[in-house]
Image (cartoon, rainbow, N blue to C red; front, side, top):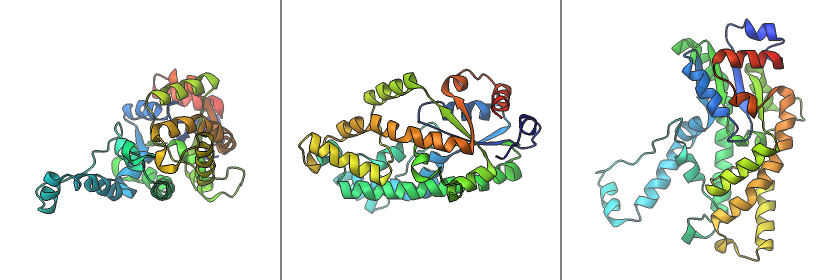
Length: 282
């Protein structure tokens, strides 16, 4: 690990951490807490994906919808209006909207082939954004003078790595430059995440083999065709399965760093609290 002991961590001139875990357990909350201290640079993987790697795809998707409206089509073709996404750390909806959900087009669903294409593009974008972590940690210090750095990852990081492989190329790169911190939830957290997702289902990225198996099972279980699937029903049905699929993958990743609980993160009130918490784990 990047820091060999609690003392090494406490006395480091530059503390660099990468937090991972299920979406909704406190990664962004922790990042914002540290950013507000004034000494930490917050690097958001989802923000980087939406602005650097998928920005053109996201904008083109919005333009394609606008072109279906004659009034907006004429304005676009005459360069009378400009369309762009307003992605911020607090509003990453354009990325999720572009990623979409598979199913009935009349209900906003995407054809499965197009959905798989977008999933693949997102995977490549997320890996590229993760590989940019070291560049941004050095940039944050050299350009802006931030002594410390936190990388706020997306929930799907575990889908693109093999944590059992000690030479996994992505994890090896990340662990060389940051302390990996798993925010671990318990069963109560999982049930709350499921309830929250059921109220407002949001697009997710899936490992291809998992997605194909879930899609085939859903079609058979509901005796339905691809273009008849209710998009929200499918991703609700898939969510708990996705969490169960990801949990052991996160756990395997934890050997590359340290683990903290979601309750411990929720209880943090300051940067000093965080430094103390990580020291106890080291």
